[in-house]
Each structure stands twice: as C-alpha cells, then as structure tokens.
Image 1 (cartoon, one colour):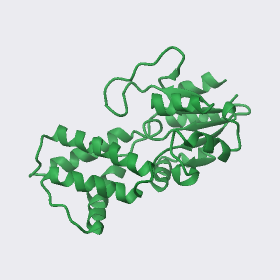
Image 2 (image 1 turned 90 degrees about the vertical axis):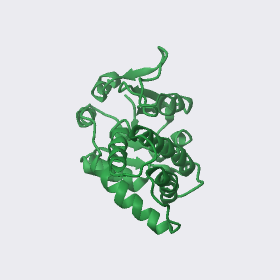
Image 3 (image 1 turned 30 degrees about the vertical axis):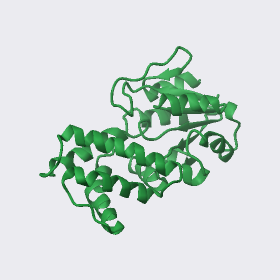
Length: 239
C-alpha cells in the first residue's frame, strides 16, 4: 500500500475545462461587438489561459497579473476598450469572469466515493492535493464541495516553491515520504503520470476520455501506463 496519494485537482477532482467554457460562453454571448464567432472567442480565451498560466508558473508574473494579461488580450476580441488602470482590469476579471466561473465549478461524481473508499481501507494512505493552481482558489474549490477534510495537505507552487513537474520531489519532502512510496493521480498523461514517474513516484492516469488541453479524444498511451477511467476504480488498484 502506498504511503501517500497525491491528487491533481483541475480535470481530476473538479471539471475546470467545462467551467471555463461555460463562463466564457456567457461573456461572449453578452458581447454585441465581438470580432469573431463565439466558438473562436472561447478557443482564444482557452489559449490565452494556457499561455499566461505558464508565465505565472515560471515566476514571470503574479497570479493577478496573469489574469490582467488575459484580459488585455481578450477584451479587444469582444470589441471592448482596454483600460490602462490595472484596478479596472482586476474589476473586469472579478465581475465578468470570476463570479460566473466560480458558479460554474462542478466536482466529478466519482470523487467523493473514491475518497470515502480510500478512507475506509485498512492502513490506508494519507491523501494530499498537488496542484499548479492558485492556493486560495484551489482551496475554495475543495471547500465548496466539502472535500478539504479528506486531505492532509493542499500543495501548490506557493507552498513548495515549484510547479509540477519540479514539485514532485518537494511534495514528497513536505509529506515526509519517499517518492517510491507515493502515488500521483491525474488526468494529464505527461505532467501527472510520466513526470511523476521520472521523479520516482507511481503515476496513475485518470483517463476521462477527453484531452484537457484540446478538448478532443484522450491521447494515446502505451501499455505500461497505469490507467483508470473512474476514480472509483482507484482503491481496487491500490489494494
């Protein structure tokens, strides 16, 4: 039995992609002067999110600044002027995006049954969340769905000083465990499974049938990858 199981959050515990798409769809539908078709604008926001999130994770900007960068690039596509005052950009993000985004959060139905089953295992593993997201926002997601109580720690770049994949070693040190006794579960084949394995952990791929980045079918994986289609399959694999 593993000593610690790390869970990714977005795409694993909470349906981040659907929440983003729903939120931006609402913003676009209320923009009469938009410069492109709704589906193009939604895709543009998703691309901007990935680009500026990478800047944040690389330490090139703060979490608030990465939101401002997104807004500056996206507002012209809506046919809206871009304010110079950062405070007005923050207000746009808060009022137009974050409020609706938070309403759109959904936890996958297999999450709580999985956590309850793990909790019931004899000499069961300790559980932690390992995520590249903002600590406040990620804890708010877990609290919304009553999931915080299951986890000994919620680890982000703010606590560890590094993002995945570099964060795996630091996360094991934080949890006082050896990587060989740790498991990482996530929906991203490269960053959650292959990178975890390179760091000495056991990576388990949660294949929900969709590529988190493209929205298309899941990527191909070779036969050596440990794979589950539902989190409720995970306890059986561990025991």
